[in-house]
Length: 139
Image: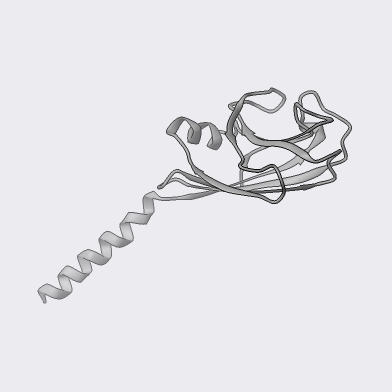
């Protein structure tokens, strides 16, 4: 009987632990119209990410096509609202699509990301301030 009670307690403890963890899905459509100022590029793309609240790990995949030339930079910028520019908060290892990566965020970075204050930005020679951009939003 003691063994059954111990197993029941263990099962309850294991079941209770993941309740605090959450995976938040974020997404954005990357468009020239979202740039500040907007440009005439016909390029488009998507930024998809997941954030594990327990480990504070952000994982992302960014794809795009139709740029005016090769990408010369790609980053998450913030904190910023749509229509405003901000500095780089998380550079990507390579600007070549598909861009995949992950990083552990600070508490401040996580708060800004989850508040919708980060955007993905793809830069080209013709549009060094950014050719396509999209604000990351919870899905």
